[in-house]
Image (tube, rainbow, N blue to C red):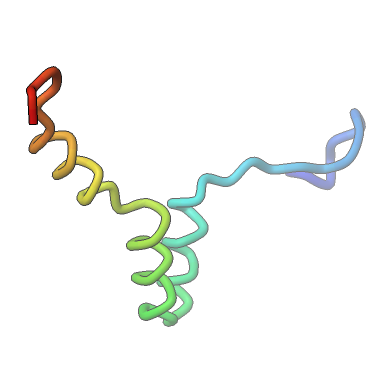
Length: 58
């Protein structure tokens, strides 16, 4: 538990995905979806990489 720590300021690392999931679980599905799309959905990046043809003369 965080309160039981004696070695400094209590701290817990959270992933962005976990925070977005928690927001969705509270019922704000719209905000969770928007956060997911903006910060953790790499589909556009993957699409760009798939379409990339390195070292072409285009």
